[in-house]
Image: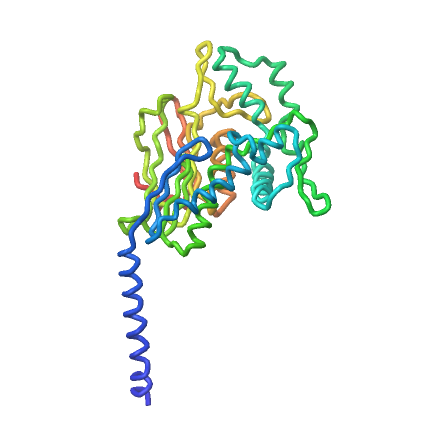
Length: 341
């Protein structure tokens, strides 16, 4: 009886085995497409395994994000809000607003989409050879804080209400990561299993690379290099089915009266940050989260960054900091197996 049952099972096992072999060979023979272009003021590179070139669809998805959050697009939702208009908010805008609000609370205000007036004052001021004085910083701080904005629902339509007309919204520290997530969703909706999306350094990966290996992403070694000529790699991370973002002050800084000023502005103090953290890399489930937290850590410094990474089991962190003139590295225990020294 057992032998008879086994005879009936053999054909099904053979079908399963040969079917699996056929699927694997089919996947291996499918080409990898490579698309690149310009979005959010930066360049994107996308590699994915598909018989079809999907760049048109990808750019349609990116345009949706641009139409909501771009500071360069005068007709974007963000630009309209900053001009004092009250555009009706889409589901996409509300999704990123809710995530930004949650991260703002989790980082005790280190991540804040209203910090733009301070960033502009310090950035443009330096370029003109002038630094904002204390009175100017204090004046601008009254416009900083996500608690000064409210998402309201009136008759089923959603709007942003400002406590003051001079408050600005700027999603630059999370929009590129979110854009990478949106493209990832699009590729997954097309049944694509293997891809790597990179928008201005914010990365989402899935499956395997064209070499049939896990995706490997480099972390740049920090150095005072405003010209971005030095691209020496600090380490390589094996990144599969994860999102990754890196933020750093080592390429955007100024010297004034012999003192170095980072481009990262602390929303609470109103001044450029002064601490030892040079670069923060975060791996997370979504690139929007990785992007926002990597920026937040550059505001908070290494000790507070470590505490948040340890608190989030779904995060991995790789931090590079200055210790008496030498670069040192700290990374979370759960990242150890992904690091290639």
